[in-house]
Image 1 (tube, one colour):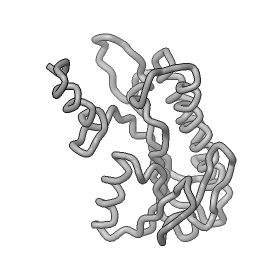
Image 2: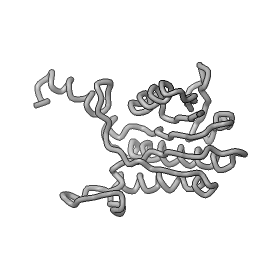
Image 3: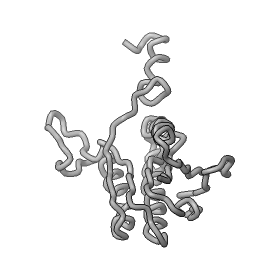
Length: 185
């Protein structure tokens, strides 16, 4: 099985790639820098660049790429980068999958629990509608950008995950420094 992964250098991507490779999958990685290892292919979502060879013989695509929402203050520019990193990248990937002579069978396109917005104590499940606010709007656009792949007959899934917790980073990685200087209680 050949699996193409975007966001392979992120917290979830690193763990996912290691697990897939350990299970015997051929893991291919889309990278924004010049490729430096076998199985790496260049893409530039903002510039519309995509190495279509990455999809040759590919069984599945796992799309995890996107700027961290926890990486700094939500200025107007940062919010634009968060949104564009997801919507433009997903649109480019979905279009290239749809145009592939032999598209992969499945696209797992990450999304986030931000889709539901802040609903207080309301109990939510996958059938709950979209919420309001920046994250909910971004998630809706992000998921919609994958539609061309589904339109080409590719099975599409949008796991809506929350913040990552791991010793290696994510939200949990920000706690120890705060505790060392006092406000982490």
